Image 1 (cartoon, rainbow, N blue to C red):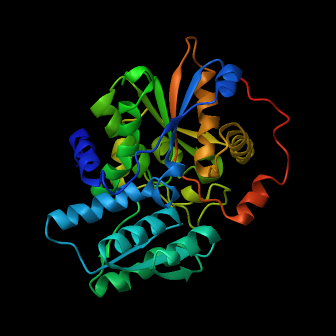
Image 2 (image 1 turned 90 degrees about the horizontal axis):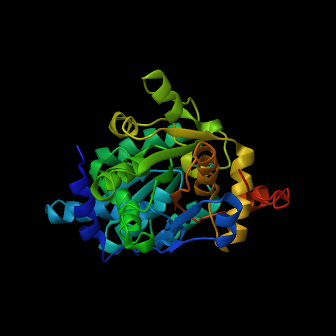
Image 3 (image 1 turned 45 degrees about the vertical axis):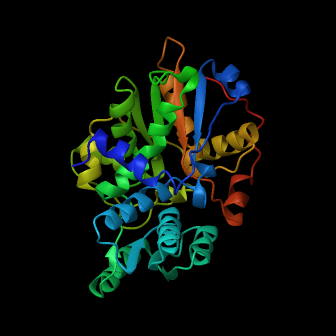
Length: 331
């Protein structure tokens, strides 16, 4: 089981292979909400997403152990696929990646561009099942979230943010918000908080249309979708959280559910305010931030992990189909 020490070790291990991404703020947004919102810009990470941290930590751990394979494989809705492909290319390995057809076209092509063999399946379930044949042929499987090494790598994003926090104070953040798909990023973020700032609250955020994590926490047993949920947030179209990530999710301050309208609203507003390309998956965290701030009576400083910035043209068209900038953010 991962501990905070594993996040610190992962940070040292992957330091030469990933970017130390910047923290950003919008003075306009801070004034509109009356609180301080700090963004950890993993959309500026290598491959455009935090996922490269987990993939590289897994591969480099295997290398340290003298167990680095010739061939790796995974299934993914996109960013983990790119991360594994990038890691394989960096270390000179073969990669076979299974991606469902409803994944972002941009992410599919980007995975191919890193040299991986990409197999596009009809559904997410088929992608998860098809990977077994490649494993049986000797490939090492890198799970997108149900892996301690992956989780530890993902947690380094929040760890950096705590270390680089405003005023050089690791206790500066009252709360941190991260997207929740399979739960790896949120789990790693909770561990990072335990290492650097145990007083900081940790929240996962997921679409109401893809709320398997929230349902799981409410019901006490893992809820599984029969098919990939219908949400603009393609990075969190996972079918279920794992027992491993659930153990950490139970220790967080909860998983907040947000609407598709709110996800679209904040994707437009964060793109406008930060002048960055931001995936709906991570922009939706701001809807969770607003839910939290409405319950607070003292000024807050919160951290939002902008998990990715890979947005396909067809997704951009959906995001901007209706102008949502006319309604100014507020509580």
